[in-house]
Image 1 (cartoon, rainbow, N blue to C red):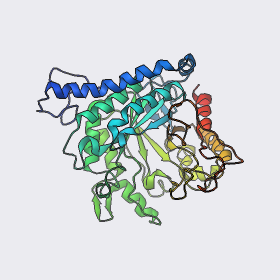
Image 2: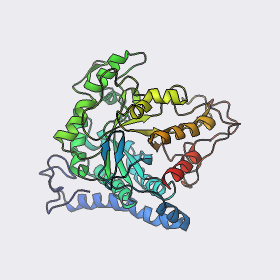
Image 3: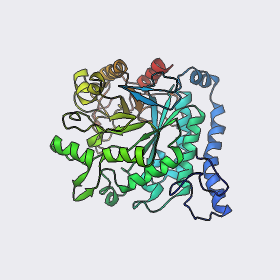
Length: 415
């Protein structure tokens, strides 16, 4: 959290912070901002006692990690020198245009992540444009207050907090210019560093699913655009992930651990070494999302595991899920979200992550994805090998997913 001086501006802040320098904030505006933060927190406080004592006992038995976090070889170390492996959940209400109606839901999910899922990490997706505008020239103090409320609640549960910069939910015309990091991304992280750059419990996930790519693009072009920027679909990106990481670390002054996602929606890091695309700043963990291809150790090693086995860098699975698509053939299934052989291969995948010390962030507490009902965030979905199907028109038992496997995995690894 930012510290406050007597002027309603975060102490030590420049451009970033809760209010812009020079703004005169009246008491009505201040009261509204405070109410936005406190109201959802009050809802969570009122809801939590309704659970049984088992949740509290379960949560207290689960591992917690204390930063600052540092990278040593292929491992991340906590403050006390122990190895930190992230077992967490993503909440995404703040990425939506209707975020004001979703903050309370996020807060309840954060509480459930700590109390019921035996996690040590929460990943919060933040919409860059909602905070600073598409041209990075505005500032929404109410949105920042919502971010602070989610971070504060997570830290009160002693969770590690991952802040993720998300641009996928901008209007299509704007999204066209945000397939990779932009000058606005630098502004966003300058502001986040003002608030959390010295918070040892916060990790910065620098850019969600870089996508300066098209199918069949040569790998050399793919990695060049990701690493250094360039022209993509008639849009010029003046820098890539290398310069973004260097800016946040060296110019903005962040002391946080970084999660860095790969090209093409971070589906694979294959080719990173061949095309000399490692990020040369300190404290980097590479974050794979929804790995594609065959579901076996050879494919996983080629996509990301080699970074660990070859002693190059630590890895985290920043987003993972497996669920049956909604039984409606008109709804597209996102690639990698449903494995036809999931009842067999998801346990194998989790064992593979364990063997390499790779953490995982499950995606996310939504009915049909990890849970059956929003009313029961502690009741995970299950898989039945006899009825599991990735074909929307062939589901004899709809609504299955890997929820129970994830919950059990977190309990085994972090309990």
